[in-house]
Amino acid sequence: MGELIAFSSKARPAPQAPPAVGEAQILFFLGVRYVRPEDAATKTPGGGGKATSGGRKRKRRA
Image (cartoon, rainbow, N blue to C red; front, side):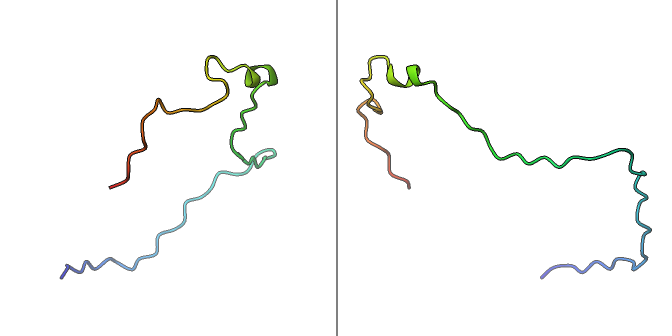
């Protein structure tokens, strides 16, 4: 089994927060959006629009 450790039951005083100064803002980070320009999306160098993996098969997970 394990060992029991007895902690003291003294209540510690909560740390005092500094007084609030000024205003605050709440910001939400919703991710990153990548937008490809239209002319770059239609011109693929040497691929002809196909996404290939070099002719190799996918590896199976163990």
